[in-house]
Image (cartoon, rainbow, N blue to C red):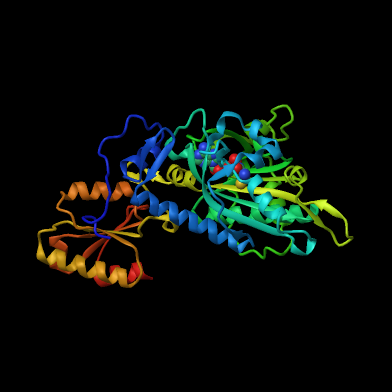
Length: 437
Ligand code: 5CA
């Protein structure tokens, strides 16, 4: 993509309303623009990152055996009356009345709707287990939307719902999501710590939040210090095998989110307890028959008896992850994207857009990178060298290729690694070979 054709409205000044670094950099890097409180437009650069994260989430859900579908954002209030949550959800739910006077709502989550779909189609244990998910916008009328997309009112979530016949298979479905979450966050370069959690309006009695430690995190969290030294989880897993040993390993040491932490009952000696702040990027729940019972979602078991199905739900904050990754990976100059979610892999800077030799080298590299399938943002603008360097550092692409008149004369370009800052002079061909590898 040529910068002169792109839309990258970067800001020089730090917007006054942004209190945390991810919000500041997302605004400055032209990734999002606030439409109204807690509601954002995703500008091209931010949208590319959102899509990359979404794709990793999708691949790992699919790998774990979940099946993708899409439910609407607007739901009928009727189903929520049956589950009892139409009243329970309170002011966080955005309620809408259609032209016929029917009560509708903008979905804050989808337990009711998926249970309704399930109950009308599945009758027998032979159709179980199932795990259905979608990646869809949600709306929660948060009292205090803040920190940009981190706590939005409209936000993008992956939510999966498992249906099983009995408790052991429900635990297996829970474990599948637990393990897939470890892999999902690891692929984004994040160390996510599973912590015991309260279930709030979703309900149930088994629940873990996946937390990224960050000073700016909204949640106070507590964990055994040895958890911080766990290697991030990248193993290839057979999701049909017994996953309990992996889950036991990750839940063997104490880790709890604020509402679940009881200082009196905490088993960790004070010297070993880390008190920190964290960002909740995922939350998984097992809630048995909480929805299937009142909504009549039943299946017949091998013994011919009808029972309400066992359910769990599993959320990932896809849009929140964009901010969480920035909180975990940045420096004073800007964002440092992990390769897996970077909006482009390479930023190609032409230091002298008016110089025919520089243009020729850049155009050549740009064409060859495209041919090799390497995503490249090509700064072909007339801006000053300083402005170009600052912008490229701010938007945080993993690699920069800098092409200037002096190097071009000597037959070289400069390759810079955004994360380490390491720079190397090499021929355009070698730079290309390195990035295409
Ligand atoms: N139905 C369940 C699981 S699918 C559910 O809704 N869980 S949740 O309430 O915990 O939300 C799932 C994830 O969405 C959270 O872990 C968080 O990462 C993200 N999330 C929740 N509220 C917001 C918000 N206001 N802004 C951005 N992300 C949010």
